Amino acid sequence: MDLSLITKVSPLNSDAFGLAAFAVLSLVLVECAKTFRWRIFLGPGAPGLPHCLRALVAGQLTNALLPLRAGDAVRIGMIVWSGSLLTVATVSTAAAKAIDALCLAGIAALIVGAEFAGLRWIPPVLAVCGLVAIIWVRREPAIAQRLIDRVPLVRKLRIAELAVVLASIGPRQIALALTMTVIVWTCGTMANLAILAAAGIAPTFDLAVRMLVGVYLAGLAPAPPARVVVFEGVVAGTLMTAGVDPGAAALAGLLLHGALLVELGALFLIANASTWLRRR
Image (cartoon, rainbow, N blue to C red; front, side, top):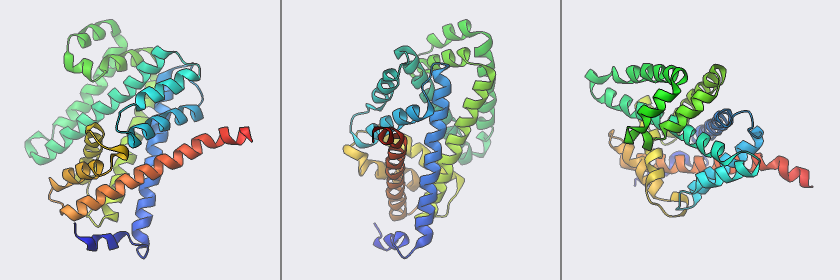
């Protein structure tokens, strides 16, 4: 790594720290939007937003700090402890993951479309197909469920759970959930743009969405506690495929990992503050 890059985030460079702080704030908004969406999916018996936030952050921290992907179990367990049914907690969690998986597939298609000019029609077509599918699932839930059960890939993506949730909530709740999903991915992209700038890389939409894919892949790869080195390496690898200097790409991965850990730690303290204050 080019050690001169470290000077870009030295205490003397307030711009880099300002950008990193903006990235942390954007990531906080990501988790808040995810919490709001999850509570919509949990239905009328959902616990309050603070409890949902505590459960979501606890799950995220478990995945971030431990080599085992046990975050969903922690998240579901905390929601069930609050009084929600196990089936509702499990299905709502799977539905939230399914909608993000579909968004990630759309982002991957966007990257492919950017690489090959003749394929730029793919993302808008996928978006239209997604909206049509939502309307169809609400109108014909039984038929949709039978078709979903016949396609192994669709089952693996947990689309069946998403279909169940979409069929059980009203149009207003669906619109709110979609709005929260847009906020999740928009704020995630904004955080990546800020990290790129802080690392001295010219921020572009293409690089920012590549980082989104990198973060997802880093979560799947086997890793030591806190995913140290693996996270940075995967994110750097996605940037290097676009021609970014290896040293700058590694620095961007390091900054993003740090921002994620700071954001989750801050949210954990905020989410538990009310509980701690009541006990005093």
